[in-house]
Structure formats: C-alpha cells, structure tokens
Length: 167
Image: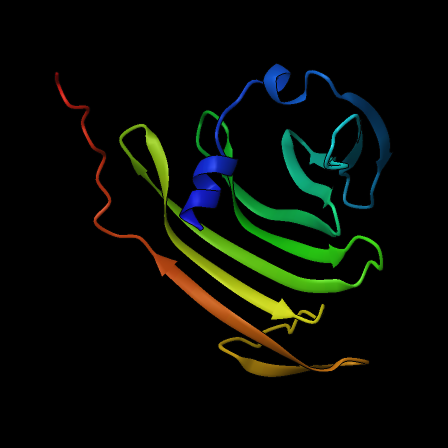
C-alpha cells in the first residue's frame, strides 16, 4: 500500500503528465461534478472535477477497468489529500464488478510533509458492497447470494523524517 502511495501520489507537472492529451468538457452530473473526457491517453482515462478537486478517475487497463470516487479530502494549504475514497474494479469486456475497495486514510504533518499514519481498507468481492459487513463476515445480495467483505487496518508509527547524510 505504501508503495502505491509513494509512486502514484507524486507531484508532476501537468505538461509532463498530460501534454499530449486532448481534453473535452462533458456533462455536469447531479452532484455538480464536471466530467472531463481525455483523448490520446493509453489507459482511457476520464475525470470528474468538483470545485478545484478531482473527485473521480476512471481508467481501462486491458481487461480491467476501475473507477475511483473521492468522498472526503482535507486541505493541506498547498493542495489536498484524498482521505475517504472507493475503488470499483470491473471486467472491461463484461462490465462485471469483481472487487470494491473502500479506503479511509489518516495523515499527520511531519515537518513540511503530510504522511499517512493509518489506512483502513474494506474489500468486498463479487461486486457487492456489504454495507457494514467486515472482518470476513458474510453479507447477502440479490443474485449472487453471499458476499464476503474483509477489513484490514494499517497503522504506521514511529515515523521520523531522516536528515540527509553529509558527505
């Protein structure tokens, strides 16, 4: 999980990440989020923006498609960090949901940096969110019968910023 955060949530310039892509404004949904369609992106990315924050990312990577919806974030003073979000994974050919991951992240400021100190992940398989089921408790759904959800909590402690070595 930490590797995903370090590699995915790094700063890069817009030009570096998206300079070759074409963006088209689409519709505004019932929540006020504006959809942005991206052309020329190898992962078929699309976004939704609400205010000045990205609230949804959708991508297709081969046979897998996923949508990440952000529900809560906090302002760091120089940007924002998503703190509660879901990731829904689907088969890109059949659109069948395979996994739903629900994340709740807690960050603490260390010096000039915000670092994750806790992450709670609820995973539900077979495409059904179980609404409160966790820790491998079965939850029932319509057609697929029983679904298993599991909650995992990661806590990071004794975090210290390292000082560069003097050579």
